[in-house]
Image (cartoon, rainbow, N blue to C red):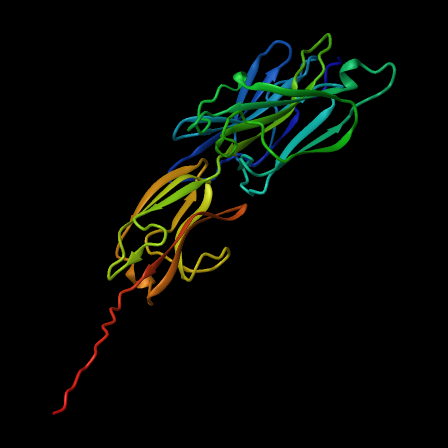
Length: 341
């Protein structure tokens, strides 16, 4: 490779501060790693903008890594990488899902996602260097376990699921209707899938990552209602309710509602006081709610339905439902008798 005759190389920054939660703060920095010496330089940067590189680019090229560090709990996230060389192709990887969360792509275990891989600068001439003619697309998968959220994850332990050689410039979109995170109960898997584009090794530099992005896969929520049972007859005072909510999606609103009559999907009812729960976080949440004193949501006697609903970027899902009867008015039949003499 020829040395790049520039002392400074512009480095573009993506938005990298995670959505703030309470007093949590994020520190962003760029790491420049020289090839093949592995000399590195770190520079703290703002969440958006551009900055010149701190080191000259050696003949072997350089890798730029964009990191953000969460203050509590202390967690580092590698958001993006770029490899710069004299004839190395350029690549971008963008993962899309139905969740518009702006920082780390995420989705639910039962939903699809899409991977856009864009390549430019690939050559095809007979005398062009081998490293300029193709790249390698790698697909990794890694589980967080039964209750993990990916903190301090060792990504070197990820499983390489597939790899492919790409020789064509332009955009390719890969569609994944189901995820590949390991787990026997497919609706409850949690983990991540990572897609990375690597250059081809040559005599001056090893194979280097040109671009990478991962998507987090979170489980499908479930829930139950205790205190009222299907077909129950309630007199005078409604019983205490216990709502058990598991694996609520990081962006969700969950509540219990009641309406007159038998269950009908899509019915808008009255929200039970104290049952509404809003989750705006980076990982799923589980809660247990206890409700009492909600008689006012039943103005009339008769058949009623209670539903436990959760609203996410993917729509509204019914976690549990049951029907019961309320009879608070007691009717007394009275027969009058008379006699005559």
